[in-house]
Image (cartoon, rainbow, N blue to C red; front, side, top):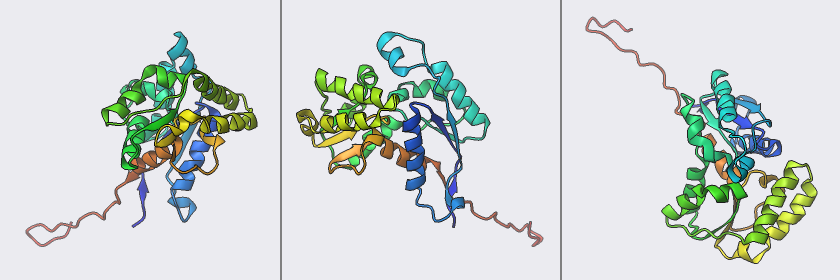
Length: 245
């Protein structure tokens, strides 16, 4: 029986390249054998959403109202669940969900569950300054018995610089810098390396052994949640007269 899908609403623009990469991974991971075997997706790219990092680190304008508005528009367009492919933006997942009648897929839960299932105990985390500041991911991992490894200040600055380079279109420079980040001593201090920002996902082609990309992990989680049970044919019941109806 053909797979049925719930319609996926994708909040894009956080950043634009990260969203494009995430959409491509959704398509690739569906393993469909024809166009009509893919899930229906509605993508709304809204790069004007206020900076999440500016809000978390410097008290800038809250992105919550804009995120809620984009999510509501996706719901009104027919989305049955929301994908928010940005670990930093997942800080606001509950506030976004509170404005909707449909779920927002939880990236932190997906990442934590994946690492546990993979037998990882000490993940080395390459995440944004904002994700580190909130502590949501760190608390979720430690609650499950994992011991995250974080870079020192200089390496954290280099990770954030990679994100900036990607957002400014300097992909080659970002890729070269991120290669040095992955080769630093802190990155091998854990038993796995985690690319914990979807802006960084396009910088790596072919994950090295013992490495995990939050974008890929989240794409699998979104597809899993979007996979609706097969629709069974309606039962034909007979009444006491023997008539079928």
